Image (tube, rainbow, N blue to C red; front, top):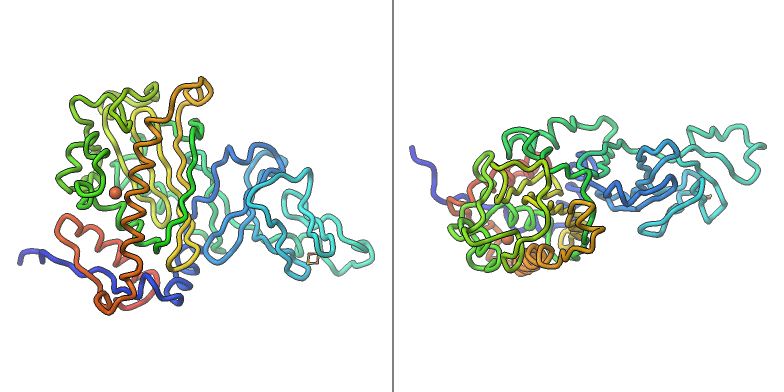
Length: 371
Ligand code: FES
Ligand SMILES: [Fe+2]
């Protein structure tokens, strides 16, 4: 029997229903490894960022020994939010503004008014609730599950599935690159629309004139992600991955001839996209905030000498900034229709989008919901 030429998408309610979103927060974002913060943003002990992971606010910080830590952003006394700022730095401890309970950089309760007279308050038991932490690609990944899933299987495994092996990403030394530019997009669309859009290239010819100029094969509509290990080749006259085809900056030394002049895109479920080109990497992290709202933080990462050396990163940044704007506008155009009667049973996937059905199955399975 031949494969059906059309497959159904998820029904519209998966993109609008607050109950579905609440399930996703628990069973996806609070259960899996979540790429939270660029490690270099936590430059010194005491530096922190607060991020939304599923339904929880999480403090990601640098401890005294230089390692990263993650805590739920909740005072253990009567529950006040500990850090209101999105980013900041404390000297030695986090202090709650309500009754001044004070936690050291390992989360241990170290001071509170009258603490010595309250022997029942155990300093470790009433310390901050910790989340699991891993550092990889120069990012701090956190997991809020009691028993985290295998990082190797879920995160590294996604890269191996896409590229064939880990060395293909290790060649870019992403952890040693520096943020040349960061743009934060507040997208009025469900996170799954953004994932689905990233996975297919059926839209490339219609909405990405600059990208298809650089990567002519994208005009055919077949996403490079569909073929293991394949990177889309630059067009003949294209000198670099830039908005005008100009040369870009110095090539990352580990990138060999077989990866040169190629673009690789990787989706790491549930909320990370990695894009690799010879002279930079572009990493997207999504923070889903509501069924119809997702904040996307996008980093353009270059060799430190390119960032520090006053090189013009503009044409490199501009290319994918335009792609992002084009993609997110498309997602925002779909979001309102997800609530329409016309989409109650969803839409269809054409053959070049069939791999998106696996993503839909994966989502429905994780949520334990019928489609
Ligand atoms: S709620 Fe934080 S010290 Fe009381
Ligand atoms: Fe796109």
